View 1 (cartoon, each protein chain N blue to C red):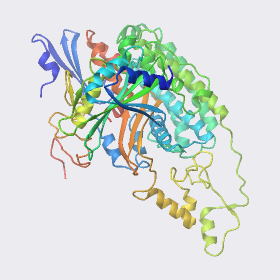
View 2: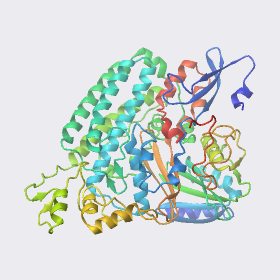
View 3: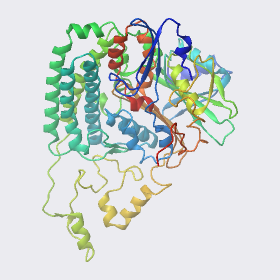
View 4: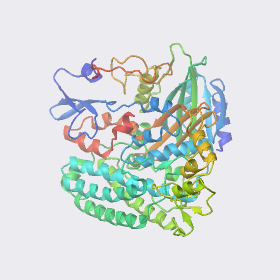
Amino acid sequence: MEKENLIEEIRKRFPAEIVSDGETLGDQVLVVHQEGLRAVMSGLRAAPFDYAVLLDLTCVDFLATENRFEMVYHLFSLSRNRRLRIKASLPAEAPVVDSLVGLWKNADWLEREVFDMFGIGFMGHPNLKRILMYEGFEGHPLRKSYPWRKEQPLIPMKD
Amino acid sequence: MEARIQKEARPDTMLLNMGPSHPAMHGTFRIMLELEGEKILNAEVEIGYLHRGFEKTCENRTYFNLLPYTDRLNYVSPQINNLGYAMTMEKMLGVQVPERAQQIRVLMSELSRVSDHLTCLGAMAMENGAFTVFLYMMKAREFLWDVIEFTSGSRMTTSYIRIGGVRADLSEGWRDSVRTAVVETRRVLKDVHGLLDKNQIFLNRTRGIGAISKEDALSYGWTGPCLRSTGILYDVRKAHPYLIYDRLDFDVPLGEHGDNYDRYMVRMREMEQSLRLIEQVAGLIEDKKPRAKAEEIEPTEAVRIGRLQKPLQKIRLSPNLEGSEKERYPEILTGDAPVAVPPKEDTYTTMEGLISHFLFFMKGYGIRPPKGDVYFSVEGGNGEVGFYIVSDGTDRPYRLHLRAPCFHIVSAIEQLIRGRFVADVIPTFGSMNIIGGELDR
């Protein structure tokens, strides 16, 4: 399937879930509704789309905007040798999105990292806890509202 | 706070901590094991001991200033990290890199790849008792790092590959040092093949151990040699060719079973391919003509004369790290204005040069890519090293995210060691090449 056909095909399959599609610097981008994310992802993972690899999963904090958090997923299809970027916006208050742990095994750690760094909740995640920061750390360091130089030492700092 | 494994453990089993500081854990990394005798019933991995806040720091640095932080991700092959970042920025800025710079980049990233694999396998062999292999491999690595050191001035954290090109031209006599490195590495590889390939102790500890299926490897997002050891052909250099890789001739070695032995073998054979690439690209890089020295004068001399009159002679410029070169290093660095550092001679001798220097380094100026986001990846020692950068049009990244290949690979370790013996943790862990700097960022 050609590039354009593929996107059209995906849009036809998920007419309600997809907000828009586009291309930036040669990368295909799909924006989906947060509620339909899991459905779209499991559809894309299976044939005929065959995006079998979850390359990356992260989040961006757009502090000033209404939909503050944006989840960014990178999928990769081995058979087509093509990448696809999926985005979904989350609200500033209690951001929660469906977990993809049942679809890809690496989603477990990747989602834990996003939870740790941004405080995004993942519905259906079996073991959602901090991964890079320690238990008892307050706040989420990659949020724009977290000051860059703020320190939370576990033992008192030497002068 | 109780870990998951503590809550789930049966009352009659033993919980054992491996790490975070353990002789066989190169890097701080903790595995909690639930044991029944020697058998591992369950495992839980804890990471984050080397978390430096790489991504947060980068958000507060300019695009030019954050380059040295990328050295410290996978610190065994820093040049590939530099390359990944620089090429992501070039994709965003739409910059064309000169041909010679691309060749030098290929040379450097293949040297780094070999040193990465040597370190991984050397450590893995050492932990299995083959200390000789470790010493041999470290010896070969020194020859490779000689080439890197002659050119970039430092062994490990080089910051040599810059946005738009490379920092300096190859050193004088680089051809000889590359030749020595290739010959010495080949000799070491031959010795190591002889020492390990049919070594019963090594085979017992690696063959059939830590095996992963193709489906699981994909589901865990594995890339690089670890994925290829299961038999799946995916190499960023072949799948999405960058630099001049599409014009070079190399094979991608594949494994079959995805066990520790295959991971060892794929890495060994990949090094041979990398050495082939190094030889090819060394043949492509042209020797530079010796500079005519007669009519040229030193920059400082030009400044002295310039106080009295305009110097008629040409200023002598050196293309290596001892000084810097005029004309924006046309062969090794792009000429686009806000992308690369302006030449130092201009900064010190002309008004315009000083202005362009300020415009590059002043807060709010310098490299300012257009609004938008970009993802680009290169093939690192461990797999696909990807950068996702969101720009808001200012001189600092709004968000910079690293796709660390290690992170995905390590997340599978719990599954791989479950049901095995305690001793199997060590070769499994060793064959994955876990680099703390990249894993924890």
